[in-house]
Length: 198
Image (cartoon, rainbow, N blue to C red):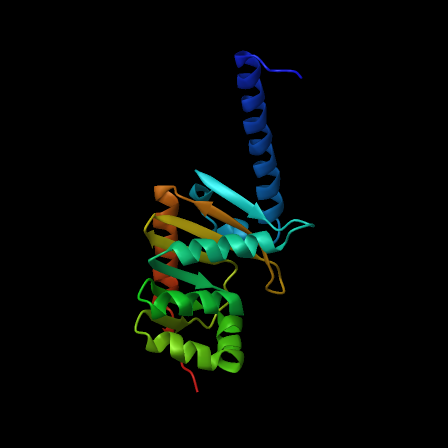
């Protein structure tokens, strides 16, 4: 059996890191080409100190799992999202019921319609916890931007395709990216109204 030298280990470790960097570049390029308008609004700082998760051909559930994991570990969160899916609502409910999550979200037109027609009862319960505020934005939202401020400050940019399927996530801890994301949230919240449920 071959036992590598210390230098061999160093070379192999550097090779693995370089391979990961190249793969991240390729995944990021593919992800950002999902929607044309993203390039005009996404701040370049989001790419600094970032991790990229792209839905692959074999394990599309990995992106959803990563998103749920990040939210379930958060204690303070705000975001602007174009879509919503039931497992995330369950995660929000679980966390807010036990006072482990303080959240504010602005939902785009399609997400608002989906909430009002399919998730109304769950959202009433969610809002009634007192730990979740929801707003409705009447315009189009090209991507999801979620700011997690506690326990570790970072931003998740959630890229969707034209039919609302999540294609990938960029997770950045860069301070400028977090500032940009907070401004993005504040701008959309200022142009929104409280979410109404029947």
